[in-house]
Amino acid sequence: MFTLLQPVALSTENYLMKIDWWQQHFPKGRQTLRIPDASGREVAIAYGEVGTGRTIVLLHGIGSWSYNWRHNIQPLSKHFRVICVDAKGYGFSETPPLPEVVGHQIIEMARVIRALCKPPVMIASESLGALTALALAQSYPELVDRLVLINVPVFPRQLPSAGMRSLAAIPLPLVEWVDQNQLVRPFTPIVQYVTQLVRQEVVYDPSQIEEEEIFWLTYPYLYLPGTLTQFAVDLRLSAQEIDRLQRNQPNLIQSIQDRLPDVTCPTLILWADCDRWFPVENGKLLHSKLPNSRLKIVPNCGHVASSGNPDVVNAAIIEHCIY
Image (cartoon, rainbow, N blue to C red; front, side, top):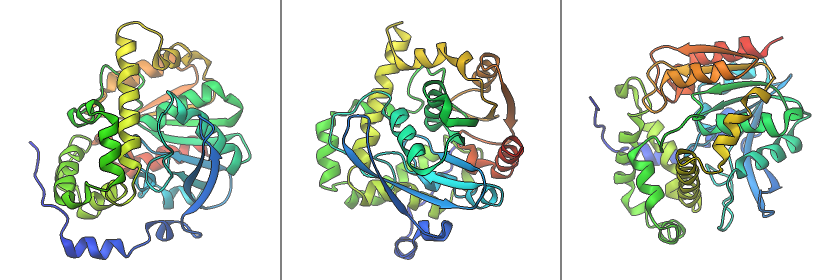
């Protein structure tokens, strides 16, 4: 049963807005890298860096940002040079004008890695970020040393939540108009309340959801124009690709599935035992198709495993990536 939470209290929101989340986690705070995106438009990509040694890049899922890795950055930085990247249009990264192209994340992440790192690098990734990392290893194998894939949507049947499906169905010009004019902000309590409901779908214990978590997850959508538009665009593109997959029409997802045997780098698959969006059977199937992979089930955990059971996730990443 879902536990309904109260919206973030005004005093809490005022306090959190004074905090520089990036400065708290990275010595140089939030940094910016400019790259051409998949359509050739120059965009500013936000990232943070901490630690020394071999590089591990952390990729968040759709609708999220580097905050997704808040419980993983410090433990991993004891062993590696950790780079957290906000994907184009998410968190504090820039959103270019429409239109968008299918699979843009793959090309853009390759450009980020080449700009920030000396390849090959290790990649730990979650949800859509993990699908991006998987496709990256197929298209640019020279960039990837080792992979960690967490609850990767490589065998989807539909967008996993009703909220995603609803946003994907709204006409994009309307979403863009609302976003650019920041018309969502007056409805902050409603946005935070809806986010709480959606969050309960991806955690094991809804009572553990905190006010701070809801504040930071919704912050870009309330205060940084462009993020809502990018989210809606990517959801629509994903829905179209899934529909093509179900109709046996050419699509990117089928291409990634067909090329799974091409991924030969050591790969750790982490799958939450209580993922309501993508069942454990998907992880087992993926493991059977990746020739150099291991599968570990994360116990007592929902879809967002990086924060749902960070101790297990961190230990597994460290074990897989230290050699």
